[in-house]
Amino acid sequence: MRVARHVHHIIIGIACAMALCVPSLVFGGNLIGDDPKGFDGIPWGSSLAEREDLKLADTAGDIKGYDRKEGPLPLGKTPVDYMRYLTIGDKFARVTIRYHGKETHTQLLAYLQSQYGQLDRTPGQMVRGLNQQFNWRGTDTEINMTYEAQGDRGYIFFDSRVLSPRFNDNIADNAY
Image (cartoon, rainbow, N blue to C red; front, side):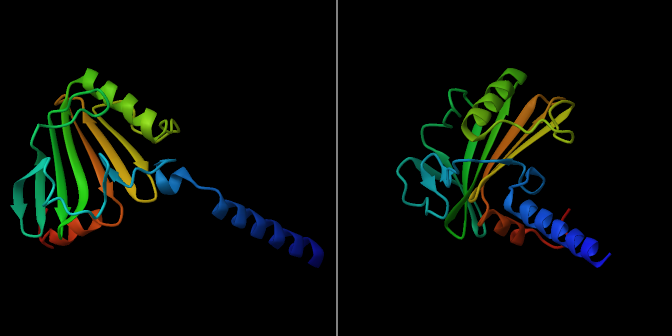
């Protein structure tokens, strides 16, 4: 009886150790194999103030938004409507992208999958319906894509996993 209990504890211990060693999509969404560590060759945490290709478009306290002087870059080969680079504390932390149209959404989704990994098709991933949400996570970068079929519009966020939580510090405790 003691030997059986001891073996049972060893098996549970080995199973727990194996679970810790295997990356799980439950904890990370779709994992990025080769993290870009920034966007468009600009590393997270960089200052954008001195860049020749960007212009200051908006300031709200510690948060500054920059637009490309030449207009938004295409994502892959797909044109987008809007692209803003955001800093917090003068450190590059996020890119916000807006687009419209189902065909554009399909092209952008295919591009993101080709760059950052195929989607997890297990139950729970929102791949159909009025609101579709997709997520890729790397060691330094998180990419979130949301498409609203009813408004025929979508949003993509490229975030620094270290710096983007600081945006929450600027939200008042009584804000909705």
